[in-house]
Length: 135
Ligand code: TYD
Image (cartoon, rainbow, N blue to C red):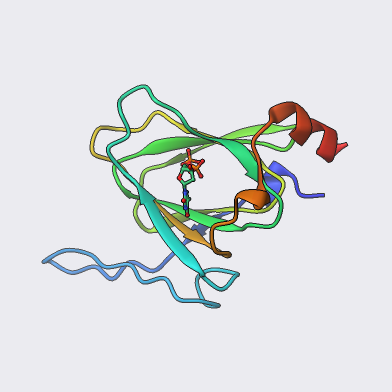
């Protein structure tokens, strides 16, 4: 059973250049899964919270491509808050972890690289059901 301590920060390469930086993410090299889907959250109103669910099989790498936000990880026993604020750091979220994203800075962009295509059946959106499944 996965715990919040299985969610790791992956530091990716940063190619520094006087004209700006570039970070590259490649399947099998920088992420431990094949990327099937990419999406990004932006224009999140101040004070709002995203997430509030867990996934049964999906793995994700979450990157603050711009700005910053916090990810609250919860495995039913332990909670961890991870602040993301560097475009070259990714937070790997493994299956079976309840997550909430909050404290979005103005103009922030949350880039998500995901191991599967979108499937609503992979979501657990009810916290009590999540706790039951973790027992
Ligand atoms: P959701 O994953 O619940 O958002 P968040 O966790 O960021 O708060 O998705 C919000 C809505 O967008 C939901 O109605 C489903 C839809 N959606 C898709 O259609 N495809 C996708 O790949 C994702 C991530 C969401």
